[in-house]
Image 1 (cartoon, rainbow, N blue to C red):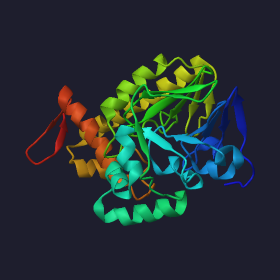
Image 2: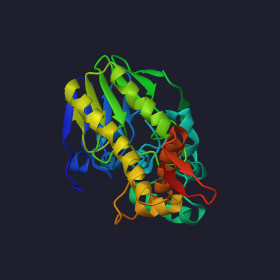
Image 3: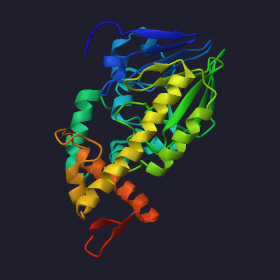
Length: 301
């Protein structure tokens, strides 16, 4: 990553600082809101470490959700109040809570902790404060409103800056990868519902955590959202095609990979694949498209 000041876009009191490769994971895009009374930052991706005083002078942090790549700048703001949706609060307050949140297998937890401490400056925030859907922060001249949009995590929330109409939609990131719902607190069903609700948020600008960056045209955002949603149907069809070839167990499907390319290796991948595929199988079983036999093999009908 470059040490140069990151590029930015300004929308009234709101500034978006773009991370490396337009915020592509493992970096992200940083939102800063300069109220008359309070300066707030949304999340703190790795790019936060390259911004300088405009980030470091923040008086409030509001997280849209808890993941390692959204906490990488919190070490720069000791003592600054940090708010997160109550459903993600335990994951922010302690490593034990974050490990439960991820759902990483016990034998992989030490490696996961070492990685995020090394790569993301991870520090727990036992002082973190929980908020609820509809929470409002008055910054003076601008305010922030929380729209709980779970699925990616249980507490994932869209943060709308008013009256500017800038919505930080976080990891509803509209990337070509598609939705991620592979953590222990993730929910495919909730993600589907959140995606359906997103167009109802009264925004003029949509800011993603990763890669896509900023949308200022509603039709372009909606087209990207449709493509993002279509990834769910593509994954479902891939599972059906695999089961049409032959009956398979969950572990055999995990080995085939649904979310990640076969050559992509990370600590969490196997656990994430298992949970993601399991949720799709639950939906397919409920619809009758798939059946399971006594030997835990899944069959396409």
